[in-house]
Each structure stands twice: as C-alpha cells, then as structure tokens.
Image (cartoon, rainbow, N blue to C red; front, side, top):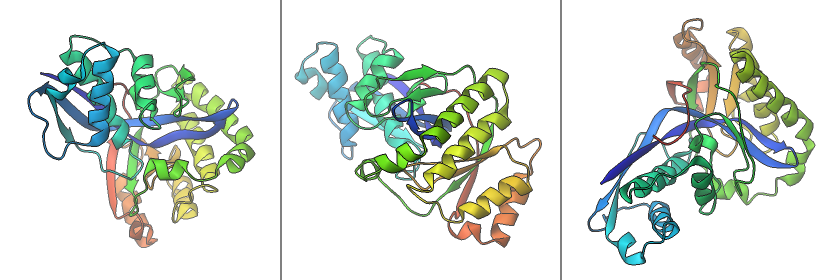
Length: 286
C-alpha cells in the first residue's frame, strides 16, 4: 500500500498567451486529494481517469496489465469538482505518485507532468514552486523562486464547467490579443517571487483576471475589483476555466469578515454563495 496527496488550486495566478503559446501558473492552496493505492479488487465508484493514470504508470515502469488490474484506488478529497479548483489534476497526480510508490519507484516532477498532460490539460500544482507551465503538452516548465505568503478569500461560484469544455472553445484570437498584458503579468509574478512582494503577485493575477473576462466572464467582476480597491487587497485571481474567484490578502492586515459583510450588502454573495479563507501553499505531490 502507498499513499500520496496533491493540493487544489484557487484558479490560476495567471493564464494566457505567454511566450508564443497558452500557459498558466496555478495557485496551490491547502485543500487536498489524498489517494491510496493497494492490492485488491477494483472498488465501485472509481474515477475513470484515476484508473487510466494507474495503468499508465504501471506500463511506464514496464509492468503488465495484469498487475494494474490487481490494484485498487481509494480517494479522499476536500476539493469541489467543476469549479476551477484543479480537482482532476490533484486526483490523477496523486494517483500517479501513489502508484509509483507502491511499485517502489519515485516520479520526478517533469515525468509526472508529462504523464498527466497525456490524460488531460493539467494544472501546475504538480510542481513544488510556482511554475509557468504549458498545460497542454508540458514542453514549458519554468519555476519561480519561493512565493511570498498570501491568503485568499476563495469565492466559490454557483456554476460548474468541465476544463475540456472550456478548451473546446475558439479562444486563440482573444488570447493573442492579450499577449502583451500576460507577458507583463508573468514578469510581475516573477518579480513578486524574487522580492517576496505579495502586492506584485496580486498585480500580476489581477492583470490576468481582467484579460480573462473576454473569455469567461465572472459575475459582478467590477464590483469585486472595487472591493480590492476599497480594502487595499493585494489583488484578485480567477479560475480561467471555472467559476472560482480569489481575493488575495493577509488576514493580519485585512478583515476578511468585513469583506464578506460588504459582499452581502452589494449582493455579490448571490453569485458566490460559499466563501472560504485559504492559504496559498507550496505545490507538488506529497
């Protein structure tokens, strides 16, 4: 038996056309999918992509299909599905590492990322550091220095959207039109990590969130931007292929309960009925 767990992501810090193609930097938070792989019969209700990943890892190390069929997968997750919280990436990445550990192996991050994108578009939560990642083919993996400490008031939108449905949309022209904005956001994000400056990180995320409105508009977005200004928050980020919004803050400096109260006065909470205070954490599968 072996276990692994991978964090969720509060959307993305940035996502868009950067350096000639679509890339992203995820925002890992302290919610997890925990996967256990052990010998035994396949369990009912198993998620198909997790089984697909287990089979890929077994084959990657040269073992037989019969071995894969002799293993079962157990999942415990605190991550809501279909909201842009990287639940699927967390599930399959944790499955990959748990399977490798069961076989007495250790997957490095580049190999794990490559295995994941073979199954679906993948969040960069598979990397320990904030990483600019080509989430479609894993050919670009540029790590940042350690990120500054940030908390987020995570606003869970009322709608769900499957990542693959988002990627079926014709988005390239809109993405390219914002390339300069996203290149600027990427530079600010890197600088924010280098200087341990949460405000620069927030500026980068806000630039990307504004650009994302052309592709997948968030309800009450201008009102949320006004909250950032009113409470002098670091910024906001969004799930570019989901309904989540994160208000980036420091709970020692910002009264998040007051922000929630203000959201109710402005009826923003009609569209984001559930709010959570979460921490941005180091990524990577544990």
